[in-house]
Amino acid sequence: MEHTSAGAAWEQAVKTSETNLKEDDTNVLLMLSKMLGQTDVEGQISQIEITETFLEKQIAEAVEEKNKNEKLYRKLGTTIGLAIVIILI
Image 1: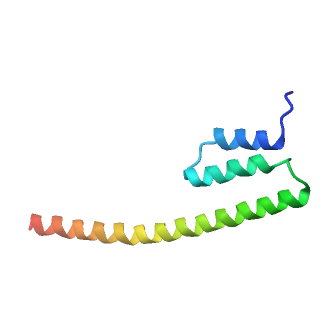
Image 2: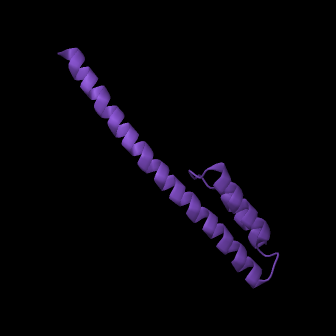
């Protein structure tokens, strides 16, 4: 069994996982891997909280973008559907 540090294991997991994360999100998770095991417990907790705050902000932005795009695609689909009906008539 190979012994690896928490940071190295975290980094390997982030790099090998197939996710739909943006590059910024992946970079934040990789930065966290460099801090794991390097500081005391309080320092690690602080770094994890900072990472959590950033990721929560990213989630809120993604939800906002999804809602905006959802409205756009719905209107676009309706418009195209009406255009096809008009052309066929």
